[in-house]
Length: 454
Ligand code: UD1
Ligand code: CA
Image (cartoon, rainbow, N blue to C red):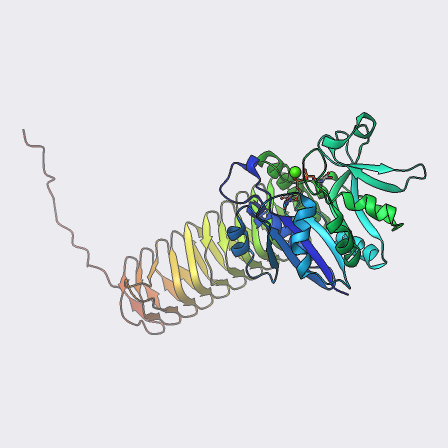
């Protein structure tokens, strides 16, 4: 059965004080509305419908490849009016789940339960008890505790205002019933809006069972209206991520100082120091230790790898027992084989470094293939770019590159070859050869230094 997911995202979000539409503000690196879509996409038979208004073009182009249908609500006449815009795209045989684009952290399993309830012909309503219910719609119940309606804060009388169970706005119901009830909404209320919430009284009236569900935490149903709330939700989300990492066997120096902005998998007995940022897809093995202030994006890190402080790693594959940093930068296309060592102030890009090889200090290795047990001396540069083309540097097993050498690509240094310190290598060095390409030293006897002229 089709589950139509209607995401309301037409509101202005003026309290964000932003040119960016509210629902596109990022939380953990993803737009608010993207979180909603990603969770809802786990529902069987889900089809996305996004109601846009303010910043419609920006929202549509940001979500262009999501397979969602868009509906323009030119004027924001209320939540009921907003849902009505999407009705032409819905399947009357199915169920509809209504979500808000600015409520990012509702868990998928809660959404799935609501859809299941709707499939049984009932109405599922997500409500929450709030110590301070100001501003929210209040849930009205009868003497036997059945829901009979929702009254908006601005329309409520004193006894209704005392109700602390509030409407989150999230509900699911059989689509045919919704199609029947939406045209009956009126705007005869304190705000002159078409309230989606008036559907609840219609359902009660029609004898449709109204099942309420509750979140595990208020944060799961909290909307973002300003940047303070955005930051609150970000911190809560990050605390959850930190908890999941610890559950998976990772020791965190401080669960409040790690940020996960993507999908992370870890083995056991890892240890992460403070201020770690993990982005995109990161796979981390077991017994991995990561020092403070590291940024790791789209990377695979093998068992027993040690990443020292202040390293920046993106698009790299690092095999077991390698050591990286401190202050290393690994760029996309870096592949470090087992037990390699990459030290401080080393940049590596699109290069394979073989087993046991060392690039310990102040080097740039780009567009290169290094064999195993290569030793690259301090200050070595692969000159991979002539201003137009990138060329390859190849270094054979067991080669030794003396400090402060420039390897002008395309160039090969053979296995067990040696390059003397300070060389500029422009042609192939064969296996086991020594290449020295620098000016010969000249010593001048009893040299008198210039003196200052008066
Ligand atoms: C609504 C509910 C209220 C509930 C509260 C939870 C109604 C009438 N009231 O309040 O019971 O406690 O949510 O936050 O439904 N939107 C549109 N088009 C519109 C109006 C709203 O797309 O014409 C979108 C907004 O962008 C937002 C969501 O719907 O994402 C909720 O709108 P908002 O104005 O924040 O909620 P209220 O109507 O105040
Ligand atoms: Ca409103």
